[in-house]
Structures are given as structure tokens and as C-alpha cells.
Length: 279
Image (cartoon, rainbow, N blue to C red; front, side, top):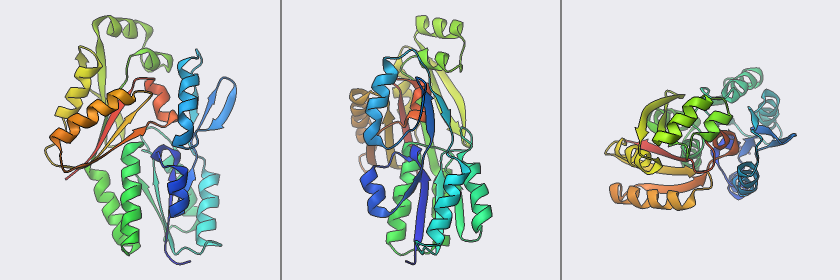
């Protein structure tokens, strides 16, 4: 089988059916929760995790996708599966060691034929990269051109998000209990943005989550091609945001995804993110 194999990780929010249809290998991020370690799986399985999570006092410990999984996937793709080359796209290196695991494996197998791309995002933003790469491969583009366009898109991605409350940032040790208490009393929430793949608090906004979300929409540039709305058990809010974004960007493609557990557990139920591929 000649062609290009796609490898990614589970933060890309790809359904099992889509991965089977396009022969995409998905390396699993994992978590340890309530005494059990598990792969985060696919979007079809995430509602169950989040319902357990919302009812629990335990907080998950999360883990990157390991190098040995990538090693096996790359060897298999270039060996028995018969692909000419591999494009591997991962969650940002700013929050996970998954990219480095993939790069190490690629260097061990065949660095000339395996192209590892740091998405500098994750979730909906990584999903956009994968879907566009599948489409470009289907159009018959060669691997160098596909990689070039994917890297261009990485530079044009914006990813902002906000928690529904400060409780889960406190549980995960991202903020102190005192800060969570004060922020809750004053209705202050952070607007978090990935800047060059690193999480940064762009603004702290008073007035509740709806104000933060409106600010996220206002901060987007005028020209946007694709938008991914991600959420944790907040579909009603995601639908409201979808309507506002359709009004602002009538020609943009917009989709809604559940956040993957390794990202979503740090923000908690009610969290919402907006990923945009800009022009």
C-alpha cells in the first residue's frame, strides 16, 4: 500500500468510525482516577468519564502517550502496512511530552519518512489539522506539500478556553484555595490562551462565564476559516456559542466537540473552548 499514514493522539477528538475509515492510528493519552489507570479512549466514551468525574472528590493524574506506542505504529506503517511515509500530529509540547515521545520514536525508525508536527494546540485545534490533512492526502498531494500546509495551519490556529468555575483549577493545584475562593466571590474567571503552544492567562474577567465567552469571540480576528467549539458537559452553552459564531462568521465551518479527559479534567464540568483556524 503506497501512500501517507496519519498518526495522532487521542486529544484530537476523532471518532472510532472516522479513524477506521481513514486508517488513522491514535496513540492514547491516559489518566489515573479513583485508583484505576485507563486510556482516555474516543469521544464516544467520554460522557461516562465526565459524569463519574463530576460526582467524585478524586482528581485524575494524567499521562502522555508513550514513545513505545509511537515506535510500534511507525514501524508497522512503514513495514507490513506498506505506507511510503507517515505524518504524525500531536498535542502541544507545551502541556504534554507526547510530541517529544513521537519525535524520539521517529528518529529511531526513519526520520526521513516520518514527519512529526507539534500542533501547538490540542482538542478541536488538533482535530482541524487532522481533518484537513486527510482531505489533502485524498486530493493526491505529496507528503512534502501536505506537511508544509499543516505547518502553515499550525501558525494560523488560535485556541482560547475558560473553566466554568475555579474549583477544578484549585483541585489540580493550578491555583490556591484562597485564590479560588476570592475569584468565586467576585465572579472572576480566566480567559486562557495557547500562545506558541504554551498556556497563558490572557485576561481575568469579572462577571461570570458568559462574559468571558463573549470576550473570547470578540478577540477572534475578522477572517476565520474553521472553528471548533469544545466543552465539558456544557452542550447548551456550546450551542449558544455556535449561534453567535455563525452570526459573526457565516461562511466558516463550525463543529462542536467534547473536550478529551486529559485536557478537560483540569478545567472541569462547564468548561468551554474555542479553536479557530484563521486566514
